[in-house]
Length: 350
Image: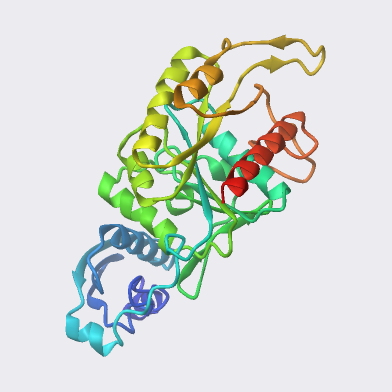
């Protein structure tokens, strides 16, 4: 049976997210009861924050169950002002991506609907920019449909160094995804405000380092989460992804309209799944029709950055990354051309 000492030892490895001291140091352990492998805890944190509380609850429960607990129940309280003052108060916040002095260029990749390959474009555009010598981060902000870790073959999770999250480095890209913070691919059932706070953590609590570009894979459509991301990024660039089908282009125009309303600069449109080219015969088929990208770019008064064919990435020996087009793939060359246009548009405008 798990003992009180074992529980205390576990809590020494869990930090108050606001004071950056462990829960034993802060006096955050208010109550501990153990009965036949069932543990009941009352934990006090420095601030009331449901997202942080949920993260702490997941961390403590996971660690205690590994130590032998059958079940863990938890309630949260708030440390008093005097307790916080006695602990030295709140540490100064480290510079974040949203700091005015930060020079990182945000490029949000959006679509009007799901299923158009927005995440594929986000991943491979990030890689193409890196091949051009740029320092690139990729934020998988598609909270409900996160897929970047699977597409890039990422199996490890972010580390924490000096109380800040370190992104996972993969293929030269710094990556953060909601998929890193859920257990066993569980569905995300949090409410909008909690998800908004989680996104804020991705900007403020992650040590992204010195980036030239941060690619954001936005949720499809114009729902609350997509709007929240737009609102948090006052000077973002934006790329709209569509397929050639006229209806898809019509729906994607809504995402473009939202970008304009939030004063984001639309860099251009990418038409994905524009055609299928047989690797054996070279024959081209327009599986989803023609004209959607041109129609959308005209409607938004912007450029068509490129047309990407429909095709499965060629695997690379020694690398498991099923959504990545590697350098020697003809489709990767298309992404390289798009990256060149993106860099030119951004750098000539500065």
